[in-house]
Image (tube, rainbow, N blue to C red; front, side, top):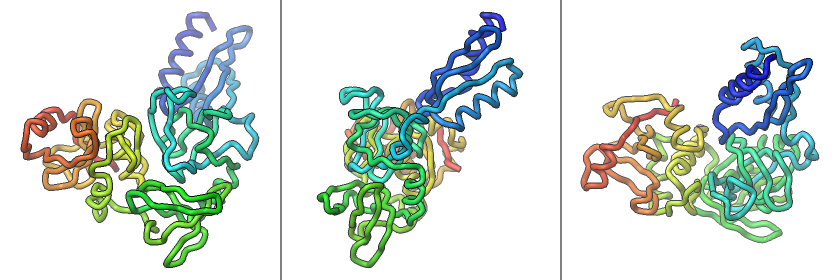
Length: 330
Protein backbone atom coordinates (compact mmCIF):
# COMPACT_ATOMS: atom_id res chain seq x y z
CA UNK A 1 0.00 0.00 0.00
CA UNK A 2 1.57 3.27 -1.10
CA UNK A 3 2.15 6.07 1.38
CA UNK A 4 -0.44 8.45 -0.10
CA UNK A 5 -3.02 5.66 -0.07
CA UNK A 6 -2.41 5.09 3.64
CA UNK A 7 -3.18 8.73 4.37
CA UNK A 8 -6.29 8.69 2.19
CA UNK A 9 -7.63 5.44 3.61
CA UNK A 10 -7.06 6.57 7.20
CA UNK A 11 -8.90 9.81 6.39
CA UNK A 12 -11.74 7.82 4.77
CA UNK A 13 -12.16 5.66 7.88
CA UNK A 14 -12.15 8.67 10.22
CA UNK A 15 -14.74 10.45 8.07
CA UNK A 16 -16.87 7.29 8.01
CA UNK A 17 -16.85 7.06 11.82
CA UNK A 18 -18.31 10.56 12.00
CA UNK A 19 -19.45 12.38 15.14
CA UNK A 20 -16.65 12.47 17.72
CA UNK A 21 -19.16 13.36 20.45
CA UNK A 22 -20.41 9.76 20.39
CA UNK A 23 -17.48 7.88 18.84
CA UNK A 24 -14.16 7.80 20.68
CA UNK A 25 -11.25 6.43 18.68
CA UNK A 26 -7.53 6.86 18.11
CA UNK A 27 -6.45 4.93 15.04
CA UNK A 28 -3.40 4.77 12.80
CA UNK A 29 -2.13 2.65 9.91
CA UNK A 30 1.28 0.99 10.08
CA UNK A 31 2.53 0.36 6.56
CA UNK A 32 5.43 -2.09 6.52
CA UNK A 33 5.46 -5.43 4.71
CA UNK A 34 1.81 -5.74 5.67
CA UNK A 35 -0.53 -2.86 6.46
CA UNK A 36 -2.13 -2.85 9.92
CA UNK A 37 -4.86 -0.60 11.29
CA UNK A 38 -4.20 -0.27 15.01
CA UNK A 39 -5.35 1.83 17.93
CA UNK A 40 -8.24 2.21 20.36
CA UNK A 41 -12.04 2.45 20.05
CA UNK A 42 -14.75 2.98 22.67
CA UNK A 43 -16.82 -0.16 22.09
CA UNK A 44 -16.93 -3.57 20.46
CA UNK A 45 -19.72 -2.28 18.22
CA UNK A 46 -17.45 0.45 16.88
CA UNK A 47 -14.65 -2.06 16.34
CA UNK A 48 -17.00 -4.31 14.37
CA UNK A 49 -18.26 -1.31 12.38
CA UNK A 50 -14.69 -0.44 11.32
CA UNK A 51 -13.89 -4.04 10.39
CA UNK A 52 -17.03 -4.27 8.23
CA UNK A 53 -16.25 -0.95 6.53
CA UNK A 54 -12.71 -2.11 5.67
CA UNK A 55 -14.07 -5.40 4.32
CA UNK A 56 -16.80 -3.73 2.27
CA UNK A 57 -14.28 -1.29 0.78
CA UNK A 58 -11.85 -4.08 -0.07
CA UNK A 59 -8.94 -2.41 1.73
CA UNK A 60 -5.97 -4.74 2.22
CA UNK A 61 -5.61 -4.08 5.93
CA UNK A 62 -5.33 -6.31 8.95
CA UNK A 63 -7.05 -4.86 12.02
CA UNK A 64 -5.64 -4.73 15.53
CA UNK A 65 -7.96 -2.53 17.58
CA UNK A 66 -8.28 -2.47 21.37
CA UNK A 67 -11.50 -1.47 23.10
CA UNK A 68 -11.05 1.26 25.73
CA UNK A 69 -11.67 -0.11 29.21
CA UNK A 70 -10.62 -3.70 28.56
CA UNK A 71 -7.76 -3.22 31.03
CA UNK A 72 -10.10 -1.96 33.76
CA UNK A 73 -11.04 -4.45 36.52
CA UNK A 74 -14.50 -5.96 35.97
CA UNK A 75 -15.98 -4.25 39.04
CA UNK A 76 -15.09 -0.80 37.68
CA UNK A 77 -16.15 -1.09 34.03
CA UNK A 78 -19.64 0.36 34.52
CA UNK A 79 -21.13 2.89 36.92
CA UNK A 80 -24.39 4.48 37.99
CA UNK A 81 -24.70 8.19 38.66
CA UNK A 82 -25.50 8.52 42.37
CA UNK A 83 -25.22 12.27 42.83
CA UNK A 84 -28.24 14.44 42.03
CA UNK A 85 -26.58 15.54 38.80
CA UNK A 86 -23.22 14.83 37.20
CA UNK A 87 -21.74 17.35 34.81
CA UNK A 88 -20.17 15.92 31.69
CA UNK A 89 -16.94 17.83 31.04
CA UNK A 90 -15.12 18.19 27.74
CA UNK A 91 -11.80 17.68 29.52
CA UNK A 92 -10.78 16.13 32.84
CA UNK A 93 -10.96 19.28 34.95
CA UNK A 94 -13.63 21.26 36.77
CA UNK A 95 -13.23 24.41 34.69
CA UNK A 96 -13.66 22.54 31.43
CA UNK A 97 -16.82 23.16 29.39
CA UNK A 98 -19.98 21.36 30.50
CA UNK A 99 -21.13 19.58 27.34
CA UNK A 100 -23.77 17.27 28.80
CA UNK A 101 -25.28 16.29 32.13
CA UNK A 102 -26.52 13.06 33.65
CA UNK A 103 -28.81 12.64 36.64
CA UNK A 104 -29.26 10.13 39.43
CA UNK A 105 -29.81 6.56 38.24
CA UNK A 106 -28.30 6.87 34.76
CA UNK A 107 -25.58 4.50 33.57
CA UNK A 108 -22.17 4.91 31.98
CA UNK A 109 -19.40 2.72 30.63
CA UNK A 110 -15.97 3.58 32.02
CA UNK A 111 -13.32 4.12 29.36
CA UNK A 112 -10.49 5.39 31.60
CA UNK A 113 -10.25 5.29 35.39
CA UNK A 114 -8.98 8.18 37.49
CA UNK A 115 -9.27 9.31 41.10
CA UNK A 116 -10.55 12.73 39.98
CA UNK A 117 -12.31 12.56 36.57
CA UNK A 118 -13.08 9.36 34.70
CA UNK A 119 -13.51 9.23 30.95
CA UNK A 120 -16.89 7.66 30.31
CA UNK A 121 -19.50 6.89 27.66
CA UNK A 122 -23.14 7.65 28.42
CA UNK A 123 -24.98 4.38 27.71
CA UNK A 124 -28.15 6.23 26.67
CA UNK A 125 -26.93 8.90 24.26
CA UNK A 126 -23.47 7.53 23.48
CA UNK A 127 -21.93 10.85 24.51
CA UNK A 128 -18.30 10.69 25.60
CA UNK A 129 -16.61 12.94 28.14
CA UNK A 130 -15.36 13.26 31.70
CA UNK A 131 -17.35 12.96 34.94
CA UNK A 132 -16.10 13.52 38.50
CA UNK A 133 -15.26 10.15 40.02
CA UNK A 134 -17.20 11.02 43.20
CA UNK A 135 -20.43 10.94 41.15
CA UNK A 136 -19.92 7.32 40.07
CA UNK A 137 -20.96 4.11 41.84
CA UNK A 138 -18.91 1.45 40.05
CA UNK A 139 -19.92 -2.12 39.28
CA UNK A 140 -19.50 -5.00 36.85
CA UNK A 141 -21.63 -5.61 33.76
CA UNK A 142 -23.37 -8.49 35.56
CA UNK A 143 -24.26 -6.29 38.54
CA UNK A 144 -25.56 -3.52 36.28
CA UNK A 145 -27.72 -6.02 34.40
CA UNK A 146 -29.04 -7.41 37.68
CA UNK A 147 -30.08 -3.93 38.87
CA UNK A 148 -31.73 -2.94 35.60
CA UNK A 149 -33.69 -6.19 35.61
CA UNK A 150 -35.75 -4.64 38.43
CA UNK A 151 -38.73 -2.43 37.71
CA UNK A 152 -37.54 0.99 36.56
CA UNK A 153 -39.59 3.93 37.82
CA UNK A 154 -39.05 7.68 37.43
CA UNK A 155 -39.16 10.53 39.92
CA UNK A 156 -42.38 12.41 39.03
CA UNK A 157 -41.83 15.57 41.11
CA UNK A 158 -39.54 18.50 40.33
CA UNK A 159 -37.37 17.16 43.19
CA UNK A 160 -37.78 14.41 45.75
CA UNK A 161 -35.82 13.37 48.84
CA UNK A 162 -34.30 9.90 49.08
CA UNK A 163 -32.93 8.40 52.27
CA UNK A 164 -30.32 5.80 53.20
CA UNK A 165 -28.10 4.87 56.12
CA UNK A 166 -25.51 7.23 54.65
CA UNK A 167 -27.82 10.24 54.70
CA UNK A 168 -30.39 12.01 52.57
CA UNK A 169 -30.24 13.71 49.20
CA UNK A 170 -32.58 15.45 46.80
CA UNK A 171 -32.78 14.15 43.25
CA UNK A 172 -34.49 15.74 40.22
CA UNK A 173 -37.43 14.83 38.03
CA UNK A 174 -36.72 11.91 35.71
CA UNK A 175 -34.19 10.22 38.00
CA UNK A 176 -34.32 6.46 37.51
CA UNK A 177 -35.38 4.31 40.44
CA UNK A 178 -34.82 0.53 40.28
CA UNK A 179 -37.42 -0.69 42.77
CA UNK A 180 -36.62 -3.75 44.88
CA UNK A 181 -39.52 -3.45 47.35
CA UNK A 182 -42.70 -1.42 46.84
CA UNK A 183 -45.51 -0.49 49.21
CA UNK A 184 -48.02 2.34 49.27
CA UNK A 185 -45.87 4.49 51.58
CA UNK A 186 -42.22 3.97 50.72
CA UNK A 187 -40.32 2.10 48.05
CA UNK A 188 -36.83 0.69 48.39
CA UNK A 189 -34.53 0.87 45.41
CA UNK A 190 -31.04 -0.20 44.45
CA UNK A 191 -27.74 1.30 43.42
CA UNK A 192 -24.57 -0.79 43.04
CA UNK A 193 -23.43 -0.07 46.61
CA UNK A 194 -26.48 1.13 48.56
CA UNK A 195 -30.19 0.76 49.12
CA UNK A 196 -32.37 3.87 49.32
CA UNK A 197 -35.96 4.67 50.22
CA UNK A 198 -38.27 7.11 48.46
CA UNK A 199 -41.90 8.11 48.96
CA UNK A 200 -44.00 5.96 46.63
CA UNK A 201 -46.09 9.04 45.78
CA UNK A 202 -42.98 10.61 44.24
CA UNK A 203 -42.31 7.95 41.62
CA UNK A 204 -44.05 6.96 38.39
CA UNK A 205 -44.11 3.20 37.85
CA UNK A 206 -44.78 3.40 34.11
CA UNK A 207 -43.36 5.57 31.37
CA UNK A 208 -44.96 8.95 30.84
CA UNK A 209 -46.53 9.57 27.44
CA UNK A 210 -46.45 12.65 25.25
CA UNK A 211 -50.23 12.57 24.73
CA UNK A 212 -51.15 12.28 28.41
CA UNK A 213 -48.28 13.92 30.30
CA UNK A 214 -46.55 16.58 28.19
CA UNK A 215 -48.30 19.53 29.83
CA UNK A 216 -47.56 18.17 33.32
CA UNK A 217 -43.90 17.62 32.50
CA UNK A 218 -43.51 21.10 31.03
CA UNK A 219 -45.20 22.52 34.13
CA UNK A 220 -42.45 20.93 36.27
CA UNK A 221 -39.82 22.61 34.10
CA UNK A 222 -41.40 26.01 33.56
CA UNK A 223 -39.08 28.63 35.06
CA UNK A 224 -36.17 26.22 35.49
CA UNK A 225 -32.98 28.20 34.75
CA UNK A 226 -31.18 27.91 31.44
CA UNK A 227 -27.92 25.97 31.93
CA UNK A 228 -25.57 25.20 29.07
CA UNK A 229 -25.17 21.42 28.92
CA UNK A 230 -27.83 20.88 31.61
CA UNK A 231 -30.65 18.34 31.43
CA UNK A 232 -32.36 18.48 34.82
CA UNK A 233 -34.85 20.50 36.82
CA UNK A 234 -31.87 22.21 38.49
CA UNK A 235 -31.00 23.74 35.11
CA UNK A 236 -31.26 22.74 31.46
CA UNK A 237 -30.40 23.79 27.95
CA UNK A 238 -32.79 23.44 25.02
CA UNK A 239 -31.81 19.98 23.78
CA UNK A 240 -31.37 18.63 27.32
CA UNK A 241 -34.94 19.71 28.10
CA UNK A 242 -36.38 18.05 25.00
CA UNK A 243 -34.24 14.95 25.52
CA UNK A 244 -35.38 14.54 29.14
CA UNK A 245 -39.04 14.72 28.10
CA UNK A 246 -38.56 11.95 25.58
CA UNK A 247 -36.44 9.94 28.02
CA UNK A 248 -39.19 9.73 30.64
CA UNK A 249 -41.57 8.73 27.85
CA UNK A 250 -39.34 5.75 27.10
CA UNK A 251 -37.94 7.15 23.85
CA UNK A 252 -34.20 7.69 23.38
CA UNK A 253 -33.18 10.60 21.15
CA UNK A 254 -29.73 12.12 20.54
CA UNK A 255 -28.28 14.66 22.99
CA UNK A 256 -27.67 17.84 20.97
CA UNK A 257 -30.03 19.95 18.88
CA UNK A 258 -28.18 19.36 15.61
CA UNK A 259 -28.24 15.60 16.22
CA UNK A 260 -31.94 15.73 17.06
CA UNK A 261 -32.64 17.72 13.90
CA UNK A 262 -30.66 15.30 11.73
CA UNK A 263 -32.46 12.20 13.06
CA UNK A 264 -36.01 13.63 13.10
CA UNK A 265 -38.41 13.23 10.17
CA UNK A 266 -39.22 16.49 8.42
CA UNK A 267 -42.90 17.56 8.44
CA UNK A 268 -44.85 20.61 7.37
CA UNK A 269 -46.05 23.28 9.81
CA UNK A 270 -49.64 22.27 9.04
CA UNK A 271 -48.83 18.72 10.21
CA UNK A 272 -47.59 19.70 13.68
CA UNK A 273 -48.76 17.49 16.52
CA UNK A 274 -48.10 17.49 20.25
CA UNK A 275 -44.54 16.33 20.89
CA UNK A 276 -43.09 17.35 17.53
CA UNK A 277 -39.81 19.24 17.61
CA UNK A 278 -39.27 22.74 16.24
CA UNK A 279 -35.74 23.64 15.19
CA UNK A 280 -34.02 26.99 14.89
CA UNK A 281 -30.34 27.82 14.33
CA UNK A 282 -28.64 26.12 17.29
CA UNK A 283 -31.92 25.73 19.16
CA UNK A 284 -34.87 23.36 19.63
CA UNK A 285 -38.26 23.34 21.36
CA UNK A 286 -41.19 20.96 21.69
CA UNK A 287 -44.67 21.59 20.28
CA UNK A 288 -47.55 21.52 22.80
CA UNK A 289 -50.49 22.08 20.49
CA UNK A 290 -52.65 25.16 19.81
CA UNK A 291 -49.67 27.02 18.36
CA UNK A 292 -47.66 26.84 21.60
CA UNK A 293 -44.23 25.36 22.16
CA UNK A 294 -41.96 25.00 25.18
CA UNK A 295 -38.21 25.58 25.17
CA UNK A 296 -35.28 26.43 27.41
CA UNK A 297 -33.95 29.70 26.07
CA UNK A 298 -31.49 32.47 26.83
CA UNK A 299 -34.02 35.24 26.10
CA UNK A 300 -35.80 34.57 29.40
CA UNK A 301 -32.90 32.62 30.96
CA UNK A 302 -35.00 29.49 31.43
CA UNK A 303 -37.87 27.31 30.29
CA UNK A 304 -40.85 29.21 28.89
CA UNK A 305 -43.91 28.57 26.76
CA UNK A 306 -44.25 30.75 23.69
CA UNK A 307 -46.82 31.19 20.94
CA UNK A 308 -45.08 30.26 17.73
CA UNK A 309 -47.89 30.12 15.19
CA UNK A 310 -49.67 33.30 16.31
CA UNK A 311 -46.83 35.51 17.58
CA UNK A 312 -47.74 37.99 20.31
CA UNK A 313 -44.52 40.04 20.40
CA UNK A 314 -41.28 40.74 18.56
CA UNK A 315 -39.50 37.73 20.11
CA UNK A 316 -42.17 35.32 18.93
CA UNK A 317 -42.12 36.97 15.48
CA UNK A 318 -38.38 36.36 15.42
CA UNK A 319 -38.82 32.73 16.45
CA UNK A 320 -41.34 32.00 13.71
CA UNK A 321 -39.14 33.62 11.06
CA UNK A 322 -36.12 31.59 12.24
CA UNK A 323 -37.58 28.07 12.06
CA UNK A 324 -35.27 25.73 10.14
CA UNK A 325 -37.30 22.54 10.45
CA UNK A 326 -40.38 20.95 11.96
CA UNK A 327 -39.38 17.45 12.99
CA UNK A 328 -41.12 14.31 14.20
CA UNK A 329 -39.56 11.59 16.35
CA UNK A 330 -40.49 8.14 15.07
